[in-house]
Image (tube, rainbow over all chains, first blue to last red; front, top):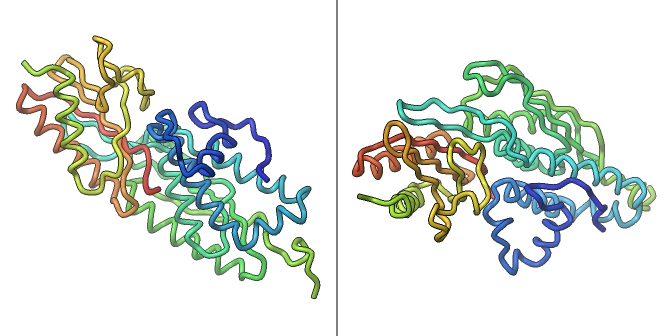
Length: 195
Length: 107
């Protein structure tokens, strides 16, 4: 079940993008395929589906009141953060201007964090003047962790994965990467299990 | 003299040949701001849309290129390689200014 959402990405609702995934991206829709923002959102949606297969789907099915709200928050974050946002400059030669969009970087953050088993990223923020080369930037990530995992260890793994990918794909000066685990998903009680 | 449509096609071919480039998005002219919709990249004559926006500027051609990068990237290196490839194309026709924007990574 997909909660109804008002969030849109480049003119498309997440419901539309989710349906597009369901159809295997057929028939091709150029307004989606040629929109980088939609592509960032589709990637995040696909990854969320992959992650949820083991745990989230059960939660949503058995405790829709609780999990719909949680899922809505995650999806809302995907829509909001897929938007291009600010241009983050890259060092360049004369007669050349290079930049990476904030939306692309937030996609990197989300993908890096969700490479860690059992992690779903809720929200990513880049605090600081990312448009000014050399300005310190604080990365803030809210995450949900699968019940049963050791949260401090998982948070550290997320932090390292994010740091690695930020170094690879940006020239940002990272002052800190703050990972906050704001939720635990897949709790046995939420799945109607006991013991 | 090379037309914007011809240059756009040549630039698109050159950009897509750069290792690490996953996708070339339709772009809008620099003055138009962020990566634009397909319609904004349509030629002035109303012809087929150009994947790379090219127009005459103060110092020659202005090309705006919007790309998606492979997960391995690294995005800055790919962007620089794309800019170099674009400048090589423009240099055959008087040179100009190149803007490269990385709009997605991975996927």
